[in-house]
Length: 120
Image 1: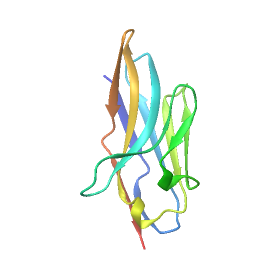
Image 2 (image 1 turned 120 degrees about the vertical axis):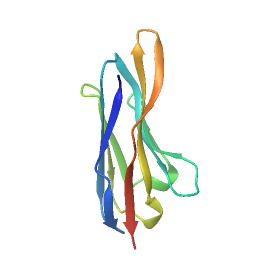
Image 3 (image 1 turned 180 degrees about the vertical axis):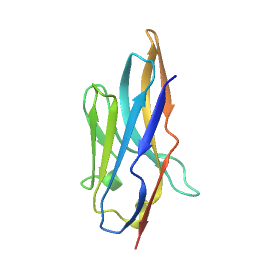
Image 4 (image 1 turned 90 degrees about the horizontal axis):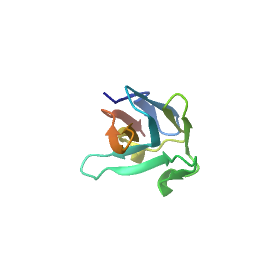
């Protein structure tokens, strides 16, 4: 009964900004890690940014200095602030969470994906 709901995708011009949000809901004990992945047509899904239970954030080299990930552990939400967007950022962005859905099991959950399109 765990769901990840994403919002904030859309169309923006190069150099603009966009903010993606994701909220985990349902019956579970905790989210060990949350982050964002993206997949462009003809390419494999890749990590964009993630925050572990330690609070340490990891970013893909291509987005360092432009994107910022933040997490509210109490609300089980994660946000990706994207600035200085480039056409190569165009992709479907997926929210991901490693969730302890029982006392002794951790599963990976994915959102439905939200389209981000950057025009030049």
